[in-house]
Every structure is written in C-alpha cells, then in structure tokens.
Amino acid sequence: MAPRTIPLAEKIDKYVVNGALDECWPYTGTTDRFGYGQMTLGKKYSFQAHRVAFELANGPIPDGLIVRHKCDNPPCCNPAHLELGTHYDNAQDKVSRGRWRGGTPKVERCQRGHDDWYTQKSDGRRRCRICRNAAAVARSKAKKDIPDQPYSY
Image (cartoon, rainbow, N blue to C red; front, side, top):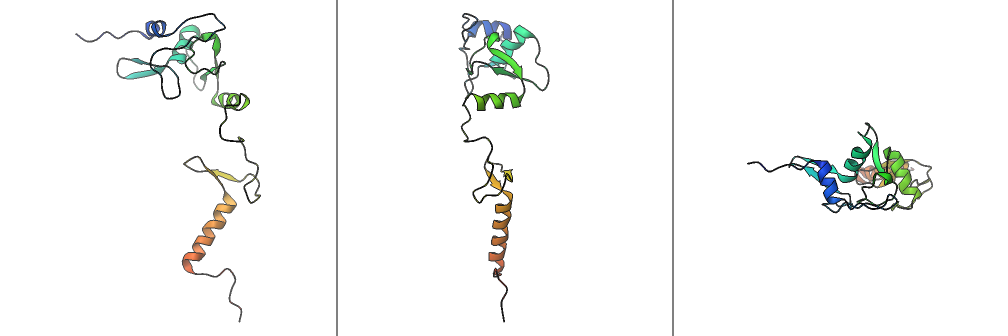
C-alpha cells in the first residue's frame, strides 16, 4: 500500500500556529536555509509555506508576481501579513527596511573616480570598465615587453 499524501491545506493547518490577526503565524515544520517554511507534496514537489497560505486565502498568484512579507518574518504564514508584489518591490523593501547588507545599493564612482561604469561579475563583485580595460592593456604590454613610451633616438 502506498503512503497517503496529505493535502497542502491539511499540512498548513497542522504546522502553522494561528494567533490574532495582527500577530505572526509561524510555520513550525521544515524550513529552508533562509527561514522560509518548506512543504512537500509526495517526494516530487516542494512549496514555500507562505505562498501556500496566501493561495489558500486569496487564490492563485499571478505570473510575474511574488508573495512578500509585510512583517519581515520568513516563517510567518498569516495571510494578513502577506502581499503580492514584484522582485523590484521586494528589493526596495529590503533597502528601505535596513536589511541591505552590501553597503550602499548604487555606487556612483569607482575608486579612481570614473562615473557609474560598473559591470557585474559572476561572483557578485563589480568592476569599472575603464579600469578593467586599462589593466588588460597593461597586462598585454607586460607579456609582449612593449614599453609605455616609444624609444627616442
């Protein structure tokens, strides 16, 4: 006999501690590394608990939108604390609520004073295009042993 799969609505009732509407309702089951509740349906499908709670209370989530926490509490599943928004809205919330850990979100100039000419590297660091190109030229000249100034005769 195959194991019984518990519907998500029953799981959310089992693992969410309900309280007053103005309180957070934490998900007490499994969480991911960021603290968001994780629910599985069988062995194949995994869902974030706050998204399931939002859908049960409000219906399907439209394409292109995400479920955001008004309370900044990742395990919270209180539908009154959840709202729809875009990734941009979520990033703006992070900056406005002081959760941005990367310094200032936009750097105006590089260390040598070049204006706002940054490229994103795959590891998340930024470099100035002008400085990067100057370094590449310097490396190329060093390989070829070309002096910076032409010989004077």
